[in-house]
Length: 392
Image (tube, rainbow, N blue to C red):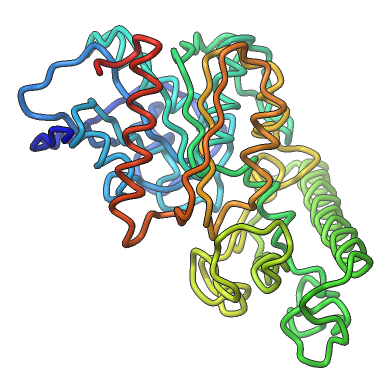
């Protein structure tokens, strides 16, 4: 039986200098000439290690989730790192999240003296990890998609020693594209809808199981809506710039953003997920609820994290250039990540050392599945130990 360790918890503060053009986060991160970051370091009692497993999500904090806590209890040193946009992705700029992640890795190497850092990329952290590693290995970005300066080329990003892509999607933009509701006709009036594209409208003649023709037209309509929002964001940014006033940014609402037909039709990209349900509950309720993807956003943030054409945090494209060892784990009953995403990323990955595994029956959060969580933890530990990145 694998040994379980008591876990020590330590609050972490990392600060680095940055002069922002304008304040985009509430509080003291970025508006006083510095970015202040907070994380939680989880260390097993009596178990030293030269390796740090770093968990980071663009907008969430992960220390209460089962995956990092299980890794720490198994004997690994774990950092749950929060970006400057923790729990509020309204104004999130993915390029700046890379700077935040880079600051944590530099701190781990230079202050804590860890010899190796492995990014364990769970859920939305998957595309972040791929984006980071691609720029750390081959830096080149100097501006955000909105044209604002952000010097990733000169940031001195330190590459991770390996990546674990666990129950993760291709990107926030891909996830939104798969889920955005194409029935919305007027972005300012969510009640103005095309019932023929509304999968939650009982009047819609197309019901599960959906025909290939309906899915093709539905997916095309989703992409068209995404492109309309992107065009409006770019047009508004250009108008604000032309005015030359102190108004440089604007927030807006994106209505109805969780209408992926996979959640209603289990025959679409089948896995073990529960039909009529998703990781946030009833998908029809989530579609218009306050925690929907991209529900509240800004012009710049839309381009950086949600626009399928503009966001550079595209795990699929970034994986084509990343050379670090890569472990991809698909949860077999994932009710958040579309079933094809992990395999698509694995197939695209350029790493010469890459592995793919499925945890059969595992949901996104391993809720009520301690045995499957233990299986995933053992898998990650074994894979890292084989590469001498973690003690067996």
